[in-house]
Amino acid sequence: MASLREIRSKIKSVKSTQQITKAMKMVAAARMRKAQQSILASRPFAVQMEKAVADLVKLEVLSDIRNGDPIEIHPFFEDRGDARECLMLVTADKGLCGSFNANILRQAIAWIQARRDKKLTVAVVGRKGRDLLNRLRDVEIDRAVELVNIFPKVGFKHAELVAEPVLSLFERGEIDKVTVMYTEFRSVVSQQVVEKQLLPIPTPKVDADEVLNPFGFHFEPGRQQLLSTLLPRDIKAQVYRFLLESQAAELAARMNAMESASKNAGELIEGLTLAMNRTRQGIITNELMEIVGGAEALAA
Image (cartoon, rainbow, N blue to C red; front, side, top):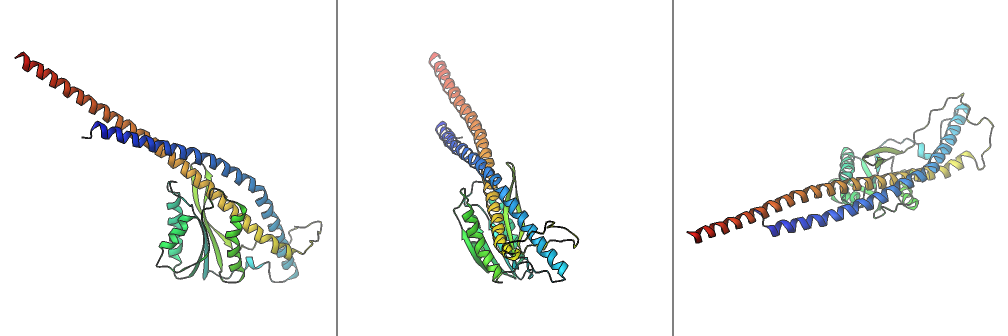
């Protein structure tokens, strides 16, 4: 049975840990609210950019259909198969966030193992993802870019650092397909790993009778030049959103993990306090019995 000193030492240690977990929960909660605001602030730009690109693409497709020409929009729409695939993997830099890292790393391993016979390239964000790649010795993987220590201060410049090397590889024909894997922030208690094809962009279906430019606007510069400028920006905006989503999801997972840890610490303190009181009561009872026994011996 543990002594009073040992139990008191354990209680002190657990209380110290509980203070740390409570502080980490508060920090994660504050940062998560800020991350949510960043997602909301970036949404209008992303929506308008996506709409502008979609309208231009549809106009280009419609023009080719009406002229009887083969549909040729931009190299980003070119389906070249999937012999050379690239994974854009967004993970965390730190732990102590529950199953956040385990969930996405498990799915990333499954994705890589299913394609081990192909030529693979990975663009990885986050220390946890980089460490995973360092441990995978049995699969040959090229690395397009490694970006670590950017959370929780993600900016658009980080999206550019991740997207530009990947876009360059795709344009040069060195990779045929790009898949992004990140954790989507759905709510404070729900985060979901998402796997999405980034390139090539699916060609939209357009009806030949559809009216997309009823006023006959002319584009200066032409549609092709606009697309060549807007498409990379649109993809970078998407990557920026993926980074923001992952950042918010990580902070929510950390907040929940620290809340659970604080609760468990409280329950452990209650159990240890009860054990301490029982031990102290037993010591007092033994001392009283010794006093009574001594008194009886003297009386005899």
